[in-house]
Length: 222
Length: 227
Figure 1 (cartoon, each protein chain N blue to C red):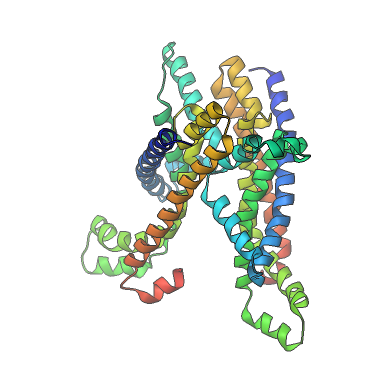
Figure 2: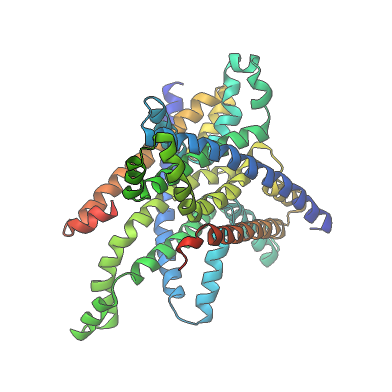
């Protein structure tokens, strides 16, 4: 394994971070919508959210990625439509699968956090004559702060999950590690180097969330 | 999809289940070892195991699987200067049980530590030896506390078994992929395979709920709190 190979792994890091970022962005938006549907018990939407959660938390991520990547090609009408421009790109497929996967797990976290807000807060809002939207604008910031510690785990799971994108031809850190292993047969070095990159990334993410938690949870530090 | 293809998927599900159960067994043994090692205060071995556990938790699961499989072959080559074909199934078992143990050992340790110290002191006062005290007093209580966490990790393990399809084990995931390739109907086969995974996880969840209820039968207040 040469220095050039190390640079390759770093090139892959850009892809890894890109997929992580967009999956988390879309995933958290989707999770917020699903949580809203769940706590408001919106008909149809809350059942749909439940179905998404059941499917994406109950099946392996790898099968979800394959399903998004190679599943649509079975249907002629999808191949003929504008959707195909997007669904034929591996990176977009990986982001869709990861976003739904993380949305399913995070909406469970979000709902748990909202349910953990003391009933007194809800009653106080009611006593002040707030409507549903105003009430949520009081409750949600509290819940968001409390969800930070468990959400940081979810972020790390997504970063780790992006490595599966290499199985659908994406050249992320794991993809390049596979390529280097194939070219040099130096499996121990190739995967160790990739492992160190993932470890450093995860450690920095965990550290950043620790700092964020400290700021967000200042009010209960005494 | 015809019956032959369904049969292939069901046979492959047995491989997935077998892999998961063997990894669970080996993983629990490893977890107990890790946990015992980490509870040795201020020893080199406890630090080494802590480091191993941290590293295993920070690495993508697929990297651990590849490292064991390709790295294992590479290691044997460096050692003996000959190429050995190591079994993908057993590499998978080793990788999955290591990952399982890294998480499960933390659950076990937390459970053992949350059994009140008074329980041990009482056992001591009654003249029980340390091993008997651990087996008869601490373990039965810790086991109940650890079960929900271990149950979650079993579910994670079950889903992680799909990763061994990438090192050539013909499990449910691999079989679904093979059938998709040969029939040009990827959606059908992947969704059926996903359904089988879902069936297994939902069934496990149901079973675990009943086991938990059974274990907490003498303690109705506790069981309400944990649910």
